[in-house]
Amino acid sequence: MIDGKYVKFRSLEIDDLPKLRDWRNLKTVRKATREYRLLNMISQKKWFEKIYNENPPTSLMFGIINNKRKLMGVCGLTYIDWKNKHAEVSCYLTLSNWQKTKEAKDTIQTLTKYAFEELNLHRLWVEVFTISKENITLIKKLNFVKEGELREKLWREGKWWNSEIYSLLLSDYKKKN
Image (cartoon, rainbow, N blue to C red; front, top):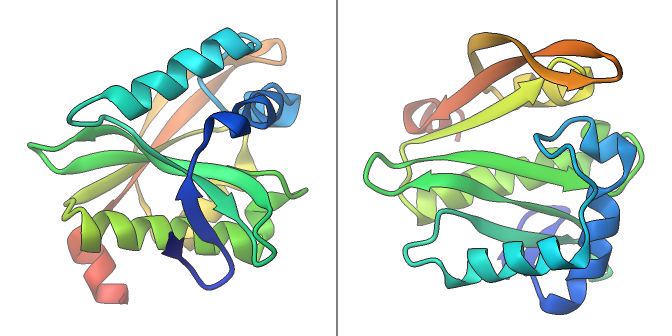
């Protein structure tokens, strides 16, 4: 178990997959991800097997639980590059307007601490689509620095949206902690 102030991380279990599939298929979640297809249990099981069988892993994913031990989301590090010591941050919670909650902030801070202090990573990055302004606001509050913008990268809701890349370096993290 990895403990934050308001949340804890636990290993994902096969029994979590139906719930994860349902969450990922929500329009509110799907609009802000790279996935455009609806997910089924076949795709969920393949994803689950891949993340647990890779060695070294390119993804480390966790279930986010609240103080009542109820699963309330998923987070993790993806596209891990062990040689160059960087990874992408991935997160979604099931709370409404989750990006504005103390749990969201705590989730990313706890994941950041784990990445820098336990895994000895040097750089974390996030790709956020401009369709999801609430995600951009959250990332900025957590001191991630905008590195650039990829124009018209995502097709959602009948139009093109840009992708913004943000990062947090170990040196940035150490200044704030």
